[in-house]
Image 1: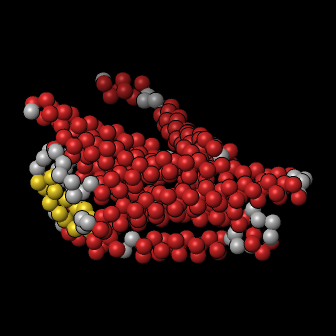
Image 2: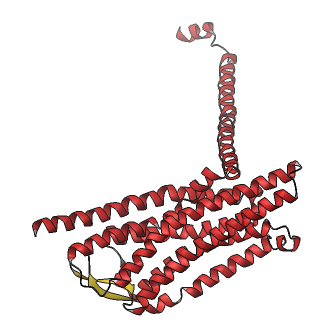
Length: 365
């Protein structure tokens, strides 16, 4: 029994350490990357691109995931400060916001893939659909659709008493057992992992096919055409990298949810619960990489993105360099004024008449 207890304690400690390390990687570097994403996608050269607007909107939803949801989950898992386990309203709202926001961020990347497909079409009427007006409408409809598709979680999430990783009976915010939990596992796999990844790959492949056919029909003549084609290829490469990371990050979590739903009615030992808890914590935390790694993926795969990043850093560096001489120029006149005042004082002192020695001698006598 002692060896089993030690193994359980080691698994629980490993789960806490894994969550802490993976969350720190997602939060600190990921948060910095999201800030750079926001600065880059609002640059004038990318602001007019519908695909960049999808990227910017997805970044805003990822902001909510990384800076609000992730810290809440860190405190809940590591420090046992999960208010959702004790308040029914917080339980429903927290998990509804978590699932709906993450799904919206992924589906906006799907919309970016669809926009690249439309933009690469040889039909002029179809290409006209790739516009900022259409993009804004699509972003609004996608956000509303994701909220409606996840509204059922508010009704079916409850506080239940289950055996925790230490073998104690404690409250836990979770979906209702039975049919709904199995449905939720398949639902999350379809909406958050499989369907977005499938449509990303589908429209990415169709876009590549459009580009190849377009190159055969119209040769790349002219500098403007070459720059536009290079930008399209770079954006498509950035999309492909984002698709791969989304699949790798979200698919294990969906599979683990299905496993938990199928085995929820099976009696489990404390050791097995600790092992499943370790796996659930790891795959659950890795889902945040789908929302925090976009900046580094775009930097590695997109020369257009790297160019805008270098422009931002260069402007910041030049601003700092220009500010230092300005401060010196503000201090320099003050020092000149002080010196002039000192010189003037010396001149006034030197111009004062010296006391007459004869008068002093008479007074002394």
